Each structure stands twice: as structure tokens, then as C-alpha cells.
Length: 150
Image (cartoon, rainbow, N blue to C red; front, side):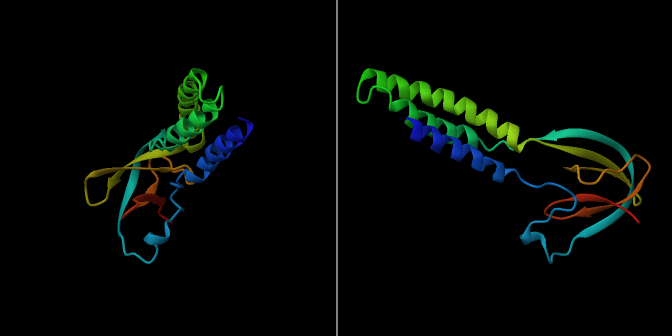
């Protein structure tokens, strides 16, 4: 049972590597060397938001690990079956809560009045903060972003 606990802990710890980087300065390798359309504008409003990963990996890993750990109670008996079910339930809840805590990030939702007309809204990480009234560039692409216009 101790061994199963360590497996569960290790699997849940790996979830921290699953939190995507969503900042304006973060680029995936597949986005490098790509041409994007950029438009000028002015920040109209800024709102702090929470960005969460909702892929349920933590709940899945926790359920599996909890079921394996729980099944070690009273091997092959009714207690083992109940232990597996209870372990799976508890593991799923703990895994889901762990993933939410690890992958949740603070970000900003920017609403931009484009110079050419129209409003756009982009949500991104908190590595850059811009204020209402500030000039900016809106970069369109696989991952849209708003950056200060210098």
C-alpha cells in the first residue's frame, strides 16, 4: 500500500509539468517562424481572470492510483473490492483538486479598440500588464496576444 501511495504521489506531481504557459512572451515551437497579422489599438479595459486547465488528467490518474492503493486492503476479499472503490473515489477527488491547484493561473482579459475600428478581446497570462488607454499591438495567430506598442 505504501508503494501505491508513492506511485500516486509521483503521478500527481507530474501534473505540474502539464500547466500550459499562456503569457504574451511564451511561444510554442510550432508558432516560431510563422507570419501573423498585427493590428494597432488602444486598451479599453483590463480584467484579472483565472485560467484553468480542464482536461481531467488529475482526476483520471488519481482514480487509477487510488483504486490500486485501495485494492491492497484485504486482498481478494470484499474488503479489497470496497477498498478499491473507496480508493478510486478519494483518489479521483484528490487528483482533480491537485490538478486545479497546480494548473490554475492568473491572467488578464484585455479589450482593445482597434485603430481600424472594432473591438477585440484577448485573454493571456500575467507576464505583461497594460493599463486602459495604453497603446498596444494585437497579434493574431494560433495564440493571439496583446503587447505594448513602443
